[in-house]
Image: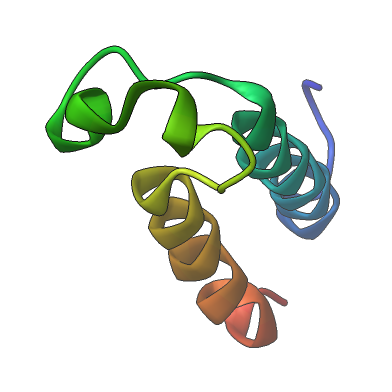
Length: 64
């Protein structure tokens, strides 16, 4: 929120990103390259969601 330290906001965003990434396990893909997998995509984390989370996690040690 307004006036919050960047680190606090970043940490909240990282938690939300992880929750979002993990929530993709329950989704049946109907777009992108994994569309052809259909129901077989269920139970697997979306690679794009995981890479976005990992990029944010990589920055964590540098956030003061």
